[in-house]
Length: 229
Image 1 (cartoon, rainbow, N blue to C red):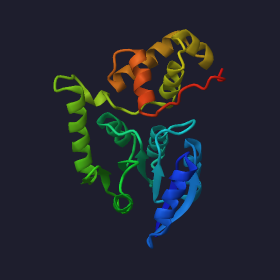
Image 2: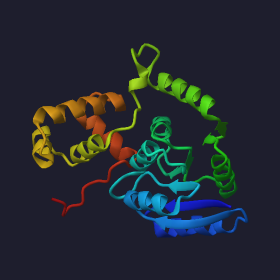
Image 3: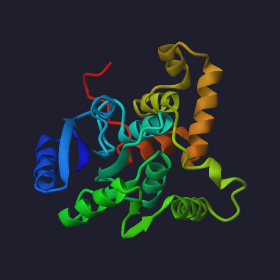
Image 4: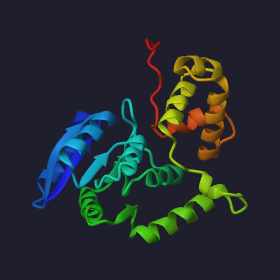
């Protein structure tokens, strides 16, 4: 049996996934969650073979979850199932530790096939199925195509943001200045500037405004609510 955990903060969508997968004779849903923190807890507690994960989650986003699991050498394969579908997002997702990337309008039968494939150790993007070596070659080609053939070190781009960088990016999207971010995080102004330089390089954008738009358009962070501090 393929053990699956589902994490999406839309209950109706998550219920639809549950109904689809529970109907398969070789699959069992061992847990559900609605946030990045719950995703990590589920993986640690239930040790699923596959985690079906949204990117746009409250708190820790899906990319952060995958990156954390990758750093922990977890054996759970991560299938990103998201409404945000563009090539740069795919590069970020797969380099963060994803095993598959699917738009939310994927055909149900195709999703089932993808889950079976990643449970066997393969990687899936669109109609392509890779092993580890061919995935690395595909990612390298994708990064070079996105950054241009004259980039000195394309490997520095589309690298997962660290937890601190993602935290700083969240504050940037809320309109905070470097000085304000430094005060909120109790770190130096120069440290924030260094993190911002790294963020711009990894996202391949020119300034903090472009970085904020980039993150919001891909669901990495959520817009601040009117009553947020």
